[in-house]
Length: 394
Image (cartoon, rainbow, N blue to C red):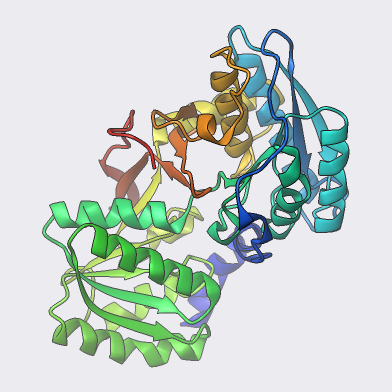
């Protein structure tokens, strides 16, 4: 059993490792004491100084390529701006919180009016704290909502956003009696909280919750408990917080073997089930739901990036494009306070590399996501991503 799943888990490990570090590194949101103070006003008749913090110089495998990809995407976005100029200044952080803080302080001393990056949550938290009293906002590439707030906004896709989209969709499909399956680590706990909040928001029913130890034995021990809880709670869907580098392959194989397969109950997950592509081959995920950015916009961005750079973009490179796109759209208004928190959180949102997104007053974000189903080992979009936001932002 394990031998079958290991090739999938190894092939996705570098990507998942990065995304896990973005999520889990650093959870000390000391910058949440209140709104930033200081002078963040800009002169929109001149190029706006923007600091881009990237993990160049890191000893982490892949950080140099990531840094270059983020810079390339930011420059692509800057070139796309119409009637607006940004003075993009790139600073190396070495993927280190202390160096990131020093880079941010230097960038602000040199005139930066907003900071784009850094990648890792601990570094983003340190940067936010360092420049909070300067009136400078930080658009971090993290998706760790525990550091969001005050002058720090996270651009990465969040569990809350994904859970909200999937639970709302499940309700429209009469699959609103949800069994929650999550690991006992931080990622699992945050995913669990996001799903429960979405259940409450959309009037769904929590038909049960099964927590498992994040290990192979923990997954195996959880199988009978999941089956019993699903039956006793009359669940019509199971929402997993696990990803393809963790427990998902085991659940997808062992639950059907135990008599609880996707032919009987709807499987859904908070993570991308199409990464790596081999995941689509697994019988246990057939029919499963997951959320993803607008596929057409994502493909278009990747093609334009490749044409400009003779390489493929890193999976989170689009976040750098999004940051510059948002800054450009706001500066175009001509307002001196275009980069203030109130401007950044305007309800209409922005057009990004992979679709629409908007920033929320609590420092998190909302993205227009599509819902996809795996059918015949292919990704089938069954509910397209919205092209505009309805109603005011939060």
